[in-house]
Amino acid sequence: MKRILVPIDFSECAKYALDFACELAHKNNSKLLILHTVEHPIGGGIDPTGASVFQSFDDGLIDHLIQKGRKKMDEVISNISFPAEEITHLVEIGHPADFIVDKIREYSIDMVVMGTHGASGIREALVGSNAEKIVRRATCPVITMKSSVKLSEIKKMAFASDFAKLDNKAMALLKQTQDALDMKIDFVRINTPNDFQRDALTKRHMDNLVTKEMFLKSSLHIYNDLSEEEGLLNFAEERQSDMIGMITHG
Image (cartoon, rainbow, N blue to C red; front, side):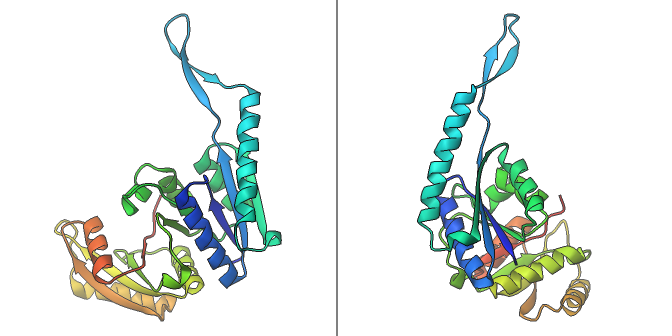
């Protein structure tokens, strides 16, 4: 793992993500790319015909926002315990999700670590936020967090799938993530009334996965619940998981 990207908006949860990324980078001898994106401010107005129009703000305001972002970025860099020469930091203007996905490709990022706002946690990360867009479009693993987490606290991941068709590249990235965090993975298939599968078939798919990809620190589980989301959350709670993992198809 050579380079970790941390998008920040200078919020508390972004600070949690940066602290975690510093620990992860130190453990794996990685470099950090810290990115703050200034969204272009656009206002609305009405033209003489009564139609809605967009109004861009002047360049002076844009410059002010960029300079403000750079000042905050300098404060962030000066307050983290990570070698400055191993950090690249950018403050640029653009759409956050698009910009982050572009930087993943441009800098050959191996992992993204980012904060999510609010108390909804996994639900927010997957519904309508910038985090959701990045998770679905990123070409590397993405770790999202809403509270302060120490790397040493991550001992176990609950990873859910149907295990029928898993992308080889995605599974290789999962194994890379497991190695980077040095954690155990509890593989689980959530059986629901609308998507039920016989245990024998599920176990065959799971065994093939573990044998092929050589996930040594792992265990296999089948869990029954009314929905996949509730089943995964309940399973993770029962297993006292420190992280939830999924592969997206978007």
